[in-house]
Length: 257
Image (cartoon, rainbow, N blue to C red; front, side, top):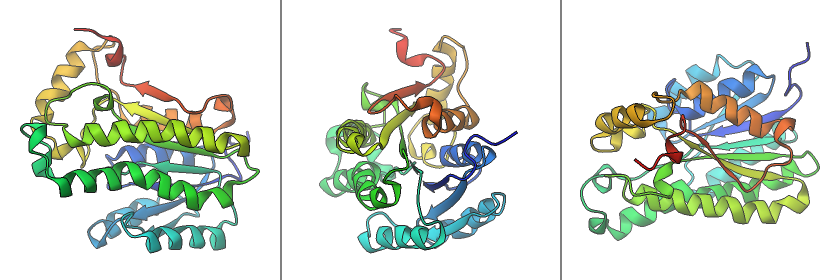
C-alpha cells in the first residue's frame, strides 16, 4: 500500500535525543514515507542527531543555530540543492536559561527574556520566510510545538510561557499571511513529557505526576502521540486546518480543577 507521505519532503528543527518531541514527529513522518532533513544546534548535539538520522533512510543532517541568520540561510540552500522542494517544516525549538525557569517571573533578566523569545518564538518567523519559496504550490504545512503555559500560569515555566504565547500568536499571523499561497501553519500544545528541554524546569517531576493524576484520561501523553498529530497536520487529512493550536495533552486543558 502506498505510504501517505511518499514523495514528500520535510525538515525537522529541534531533535536532541530519542525522547525529543521532535524525534517523535520525525518518526511518524518518516514512517509515512516522507524524506527528512534534520538540524542540530552546536557540536554537543551533532553526534546524537546524526546517529538518530541513520534510522531514517535518505535523510540529511545540517547544523543550524537559529540565532545566526546565515546558518538558517545555509539550511534552506542545502535543502534546495538536495531535495529541490519542501512540503513540511517541523519547528520544535525552545530554549530559556535554567535560572529563568525557577522562582518569581519578575526576576527575569532582559537578556534572558530576549534570548527565550528569539529562539523559541521569533525563529519560527525567520524559518518561515526562508522556507516559503521551496513550498510554493505544494500545499505545504508548518507545525510548531507549544505548551499550555502559553495560556495559563505554570509554576517555574516563567519566561517560556511568554515565549510560547508569542509563538502561538505568530502561528495565527503566519497562517493569515501564507493561506493565500496554499500553505498552512498550526501548533501542537503537547502535554508534559520528560525531554531534555523539560529537565530545565524546576520541580518538573512533581508537575508531570500532578498532571497525570488530573487529566480526564488519568495519564500523560507520549512523544509518539504528539508525532502522530504532527503527521495529521502535515498530511492531506488536515487540509482545512490552519492557524490552530491543537491540544495533545490527554484532555488536561479542559479541566478547571
